Image 1 (cartoon, one colour):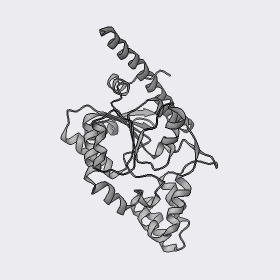
Image 2 (spheres, rainbow, N blue to C red):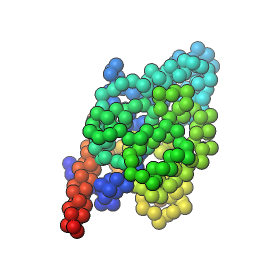
Image 3 (cartoon, one colour):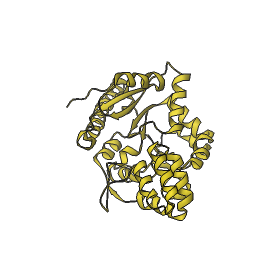
Image 4 (tube, rainbow, N blue to C red):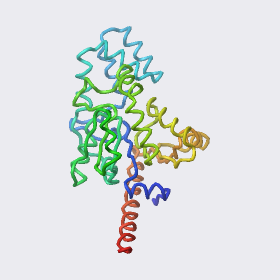
Length: 291
């Protein structure tokens, strides 16, 4: 199937002006060495909830999960499971896994900047196994030094919620979220600046993250004439909803079929990568023609 992408998006990928924003949905593609698949946030919380011995706490947590109050559910489980909480996080998200077709396609886009809310090691593994180039600088704490990325040409992997290597420091509950996201001015300023200077391409991300959604919406409100960003979303388009995303978030929704375990998403990323490679060749030929 031939996929036609916006010329501006293809050009931005080709010129490495895209911030590739990878969410938890991308991790679902990977196959852990021990079998099965990685749990999403809801699945992990339900699994952790089953380990709680207090029936009343279990009931409260399951109600929170049903209402998609995941941060509060995490907070309650963390305080009740104590050391077992860190063990559950490590056992789930530190698993080695076979690199998925989707991760290969993402790395083949050859982005300079990857931002992720995931704390697993799948992107690093994919980068090392499939890029054939040097590793990026991995940023796991959003501090003032992060702004050097605006003044150099190095490649960065920015882990907004920290790494699973330090499970005690990852952002996975209300307390850590408030301190590391909402109350961290570098977190807000970095994302806000990137939204003004680059094109974001969201993959495997639902915009349910309150801090990221707030920053995206604020940028759209303050700078309505700026060029849009893009987000891949599964399922049939709902024009009214997609139009709201465009209006309120400056996000163009790129729809794909969720049939056959979302294989169309990898196909679309691969097609975008092929278009970007072609565009890079055109740009290189133009430069050579000037000499």
